[in-house]
Amino acid sequence: MQKKRRYSRPVQVGSVTVGGLAPVSVQSMTNTDTRDVKATLRQIDALREAGCEIVRVAVPDQEAASALTEICRRARVPLVADIHFDYRLALAAIRAGVAGLRLNPGNIGGPERVRAVAKAAKERGIPIRIGVNAGSLEKGIREREGGVTPEGMVESALRQAALLEEEGHSAIVLSLKASDVPLTIRAYELAAARCDYPLHLGITEAGTPWRGTIRSAVGIGALLAQGIGDTIRVSLTGDPVQEVHVGYEILKALNLRQRGPVLISCPTCGRCQIDLIRLAEEVEKALAALKLPLKIAVMGCAVNGPGEAADADFGIAGGRGGGLIFRHGRIVKRVPETELVPALLSEIKAAHPEAFAAESDQAGPDPGLGGN
Image (tube, rainbow, N blue to C red; front, side, top):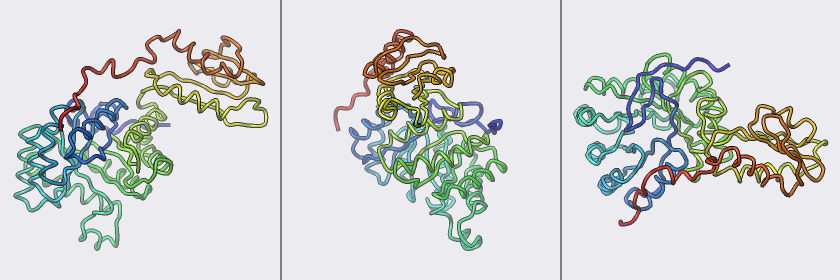
């Protein structure tokens, strides 16, 4: 059974509340060159359309920081600037209008530089995410601990948070990521017990979409099931839009968020007399544009299918050469195999005419991607 969610202090990232009683939000990061304003805005908009609620952008130099002014002005989601080493980039990103910063206070210089960033961020009401990754844990902690440990990661994060707190900046989010799933889980468990900062969950360097999805689902899902976590980012070596889709599937699996359909399908077996694999793939593709959180079932047996998936809003149960269309366990019609998917979509559209409304029709004006 899923545990009661850990309460954390709420932090405002633009229009999105992270922590408190807010829903677990879904984040991603652009992989475009931030200096290319047009390409970056295009990807930000694609992420937004996929459901991404906070987008992080890399700021490797002053040219990228300068481009942020235009990007922030035209983006329709809160943007977080990813900063390393140069505190001046953090200050420039704040002036550009970002909704948040991701940085490691320990690698942007001495106390004076940390103080300057904390002061500017506080004045603008901009939260700071302290990102501790296993690969960049401080040398002193690694040597003392004999390597990367959950305890060392939490010590690093809380030590850096204390630097910001000393400057009166308390809008802090923590992340403690590693590619090692058990290590990551334990680090977040320790942090959850020791502080009330909102926690940004993720498995870093998770891998390609197939392997990375599995590793992320195990790590992020295990923590969310314990009530730990306020916002998530799935890290995949691929199109960042995939990260958003996977993130929502993890949240939907735990009944934490609803976005788009939940598709269930039974495994194939010797009783199946229909090409169930092809049928399920066709339905999944057809439902890509579905905006409502409906539960759709694709079952291989026309005898037991409607009963086994009686809680589904709509479904297909296959048989020899055809199958049944059903709603909430009630058989609606019998159709040939070639008509199963069109018949299913027809039933959904008849009951919910708005089900396949394009999000772009509801999201307001186009961001304007022309220019540089």
